[in-house]
Image 1 (cartoon, rainbow, N blue to C red):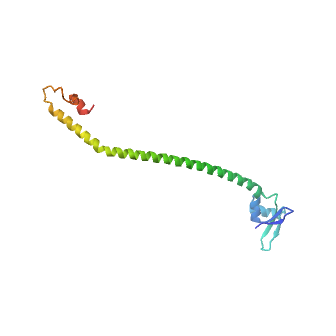
Image 2 (tube, rainbow, N blue to C red):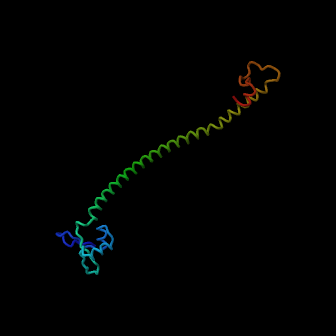
Image 3 (cartoon, rainbow, N blue to C red):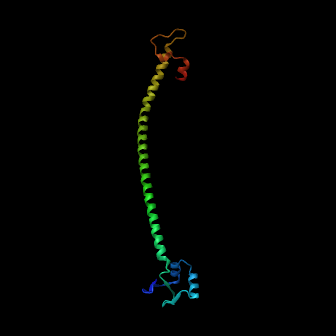
Length: 160
């Protein structure tokens, strides 16, 4: 709602609230300046009080423009950093997916071998029990018997 009161004089006609925002002070401070006569005022046709601001006093353009540029640059840096972090996370996720896939395949391969290993273990147990039943107590074992059955009893019982 601001208007240029005069391009040559460099003044701006604004409401009290807008003047406060442009000068970086409160509405009460603007009203006090009007009372003291340090700011020119004018009653508008709409019944509102307008203040004539010198454009050189207007802090909203110079400081806010510099602050805006600094904020924009800061935000652009943050965006670049966050994008790089997203790229890193995406690579980590891809590596994890590959590892999980490989582990799943290895697990499936091992799961398929479980029945085969159980069958081999049962066959070995049967061979040991047959070899143990062939030996008669008090008689020496034959020389052609399985070397596993000639192991001491404690190794056969506890493994080894």
